[in-house]
Amino acid sequence: MRQSLQLKIGQQLTMTPQLQQAIRLLQLSSLDLHQEIQQALYSNPLLEMAEEFENTTDTLEQTAEDPLTADREWEDAPIPEELPVDAKWDDIYPAAPSPVQPGTDNRDFESFHSVTESLRDHLHWQLNLTTMSPLDNLIATAIIDAIDDDGMLGTPIADIHEAFEGVELDEVMAVLHRVQQFDPPGVGGADLRECLLIQLGQFAPDTPCLAEAKQLVDRHLSLVAERDFNQLSRKTGFEPDDITAAIRLIQTLSPRPGEHIGSGDTEYVVPDVRVEKVNGSWLVTLNDDIAPRICINQQYAALVKRADHSDDNTFLRSQLQEARWFLRSLESRNETLLRVSSCIVEMQRGFLEKGPEAMRPMVLADIAERLELHESTISRVTTQKYIDTPQGVFELKYFFSSHVSTNSGGECSSTAIRAMLKKMIDTENPDKPLSDNRLATLFEERGIQVARRTVAKYREAMGIPTSSERKRFKQGAC
Image (cartoon, rainbow, N blue to C red; front, side, top):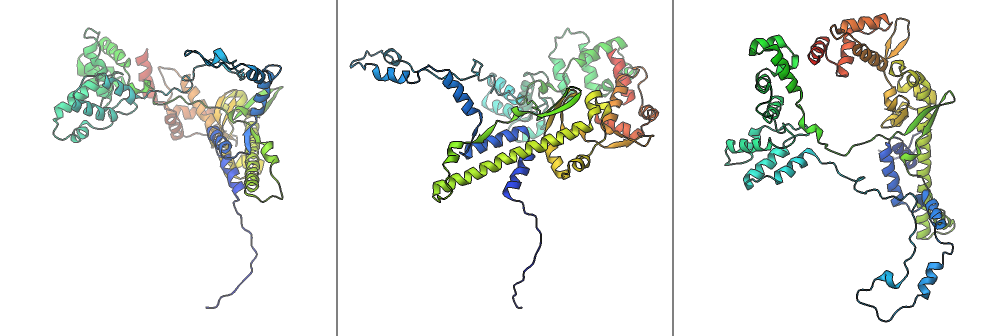
């Protein structure tokens, strides 16, 4: 086989480092972008915060009229040869004026950086206050570690018993019962039934209808959930008034006792874009507060010499080029985000003025076609980006939804259908809840073609029970 050299001409798309950086910044959320900017500030000496010079100028204006006064006082101060043992620095030398930082206050630092206690930490804290033998303490630690965030025992007690060789099951159960007496009430239950019984066991013995409530939870919990008063009265022999009072007592219990103890810090959504109505038109602006303003350090940039090939100059030149690329990528990200958000607002004016029921059907291709961008770019821009509207704060992906045909040949957004479905159910007659077939008929009367199974799918997705369950729930609440 003979080797040969051939010349071919072709086109090939290459992802340059600059393009890769721009794409990566485009898909970052506001929190990730802030971390990326901080990392760039730490790694590149040519980048700096734009507010630094402004704060420095304000600080200099607030100092004394003669900036050399402090130095002169220091130089003219006589230095004593002998000092008392209990002498202090400020008693001998004048204190230098401290710069006044703008916006300083006396807010507590811990209030901004406090760590929320988890359920397991809360239980371990109570365990440390409980007198136990070393073995029982070890068993209790294993039980607490098996409790999930809702307060339920996620691991069967038999599996926990197998981890301790030579220990009887009764001893493990005794430790479990002690843990179940911890706060919050009901923690450590294997299922909902046991969780509710634990809470009922902590009531005073003279609580009205306590015995009836325990029996209902222990033997007829499914009928209690269905509010089948006839079956409950027939199987227990209780009077309807006693059953109603017992169910009201059960309703005061918590099916997830651990949910009231936070498992982490509260996360708040900071909108990337704001939209408001100004002089009859919708104005879209970027939120400049989500990321710090950065710029190029002009002092370091002035040190770069074109004809110098030393190591220091080469390093500064490369860092300057990377800083410029980073700023261009940030500018491109903000410009693309503003264009996409403005296009979404233009297409969803009905939602901004009337609410979810006026949402238009829209897909990624619609925005990509208008802005002459690729759908993948639209997907990156709208992921984990939020917009502040008069209707609330929404993720940009919220405005994209499928469509359902109408009798007039038009289209209706699935988001609008969900909003109309919820409104129909909220305004229905409690004595005669609307069935899925009836809801589909009401949509048909409005000119929207929605099948019964589609209504059921949307209803279940919103967590709305069936018509029969809604009737029992509303009758029981009365």
